[in-house]
Length: 105
Image 1 (tube, helix red, strand yellow):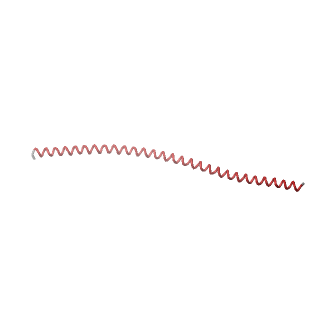
Image 2 (cartoon, rainbow, N blue to C red; image 1 turned 45 degrees about the vertical axis):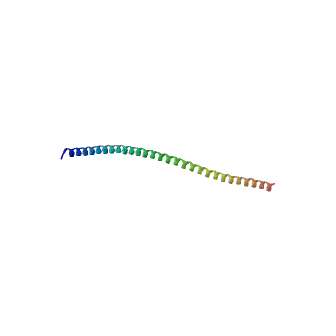
Image 3 (cartoon, rainbow, N blue to C red; image 1 turned 90 degrees about the vertical axis):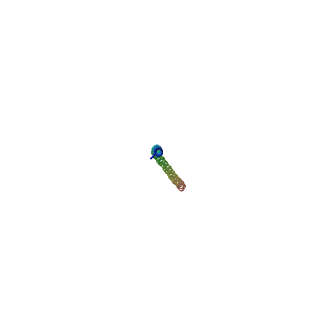
């Protein structure tokens, strides 16, 4: 092995060391990026959970209001029907009283 061979081997070792350092640096940065992504995903999961709960609460309140409106409409219909029945009964009473008064006169 002569001096030229030693020089070439030394240069190749230096290049390999530089490549290894570069690879180590790249991998370290990729790990940092992965950790940041994991942190963002965790935060996103929390925000999504919170928003899901908000949507559930809003949907529940909307369904409750719709049910109350449906109940109110149903009660209004019952009262209208009841009012019509009472009106018919009162008219029958008035007519029967008039008829009774005419017969007794």
